[in-house]
Length: 276
Ligand SMILES: O=C(O)c1cc(=O)[nH]c(=O)n1[C@@H]1O[C@H](COP(=O)(O)O)[C@@H](O)[C@H]1O
Image 1: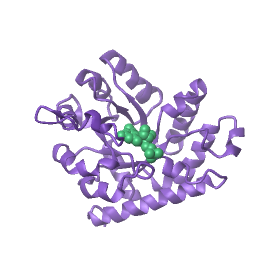
Image 2: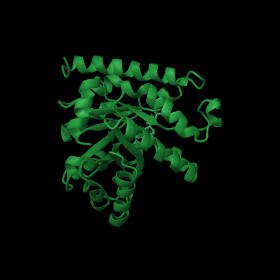
Image 3: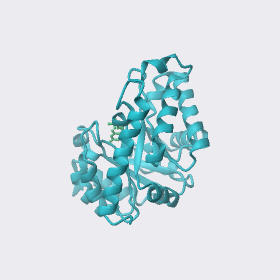
Image 4: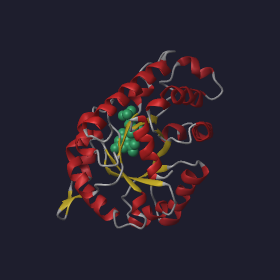
């Protein structure tokens, strides 16, 4: 998907919500466990209920890989459903990959071509030759982990490397990669205090921001320093939407949560004069 298309969807829906499909068989309603493919059955109902309020879906690959071939089939079915019924929605494979060049190329093929995702999360630790293979794919986007939402982010990412913190080095150096216009970055909602510094280095890039809801990040604070002229944010919520109810009313409750987040986003877009 072209970035202009994502931006126009955000403006049209007044939403930059990404619904995380972290589908956990231990948490989905019991009646769905009788289905032939409970993960897909759950995802389908979540997508049907939430798509008017979001612009992106992010299956976290761990939740599918955990069930082997069956889980992978649920992921394929979810992607077929999204690409057939909602081709306007942006899709993110949250797989956090990255390896030596020829291996990265295979990962890129798996997610961008075989599964037809629009984007993929990548760990930057192995550097330029592990990231550039992903950037060769036209209209596909590589989302580099920059400053993650978890506590462990302080172990390395905020430590100084020479004059500045490691996450700033990731942002600065990755801008020199070939086809760096296809890069986006992960910055956790729990790290909103750092967004001003992040935006000083990458004013124009899209940020994927997980960590609102269950992890305690504030949507308002993220918007304050994270929004740019093209909006530039995708804010993810997974558990807060998927498991708003674990009963038979799960889809309607998920829809309520997604709608509430969309309405909050609309207020923030107006406050920043990004929509009328
Ligand atoms: O890459 C990610 O999406 C990610 C990066 C990060 O720094 N923190 C983070 O929570 N995530 C993912 O975002 C989702 C957050 O889920 P909830 O906390 O349930 O909304 C999970 O799929 C995480 O793996």
